[in-house]
Image: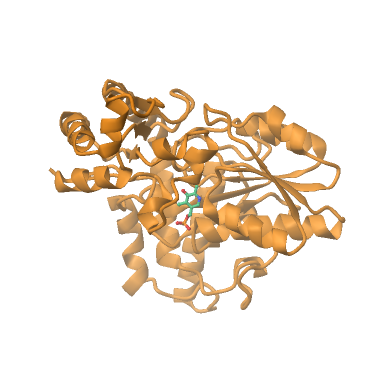
Length: 395
Ligand SMILES: *Cc1c(COP(=O)(O)O)cnc(C)c1O
């Protein structure tokens, strides 16, 4: 059986998205900036895609900018808010310790340019409070950026509360909604969101397409300079195939959001219950306030990487949700922020479901996983120390 449960990393494209893209390659391949008919047909497709995103986010079409992905949208959002703040002498930014690296590394770059950054600690349930955000805001704060849902542990943040608070204090509010878009309802107006990023390949759209929503009156600065595309805020010939695929995938995800969420939540909770039956296992993040498709646990006494390899042998593609996979020996910054000790954080497993996953797949995972964990613990010297009492159990 081939099972893909790494949908927080990326998803398969939907048939609808692919069908929307295909005509853009060899038939309607015009450049939207061209005045001739093929160009104008492309311009119409671009406008239609923009209104689909505007509708889904409760925004206006002119507030939607297409980018090369979630990372670029995050970079541009932060740089725009920082530039606006700097003009008013405000150079302080509030964020959290468990943001995506597209946020954390942009903040580090801004620090080198003279900005001050406060990164909030993460409570053990993985949900940042509006009170903690309020306490960190200073008179010179120009931006609060808190992710909508975390990509490793799936916890959903109190976005409307944080948005309302920022609006009240006159501070711009950005949210990285890459994991939430297409999965949870988003209303930028009701939620008082000034800037928002999303990425198409996390909801069955193509890779290389992102959206930056910027509320009317919040000026964007360029990250990419060149032509006058995207009202001069993002140069480069528009990726029409990608943008059409992204819009089709978003429309489809929004149309089926409710039913997908109900079905995925049931699968998720079945997985969590099954995994928690394995001794010395802990769930990372709140059990309820989490994405419908996210499961993230730590098994004591094993290495996440060996677990992933064993799962892969059995046809299951999962993730440890940690930086180890990229060659670093540091455990996940998210799990450390959550307060997991290093040795526990190393034994993490993230199973991220999409609407393409089935009950049979979940049953198969629950059938093979306990045996793999038991096997790895059997051959682990650390587990031996834990079981013989030479080392205390931490979970
Ligand atoms: C995937 C992801 C990104 C990056 O998006 P890309 O389109 O891959 O650049 C940013 N933030 C979060 C939370 C993500 O999950």
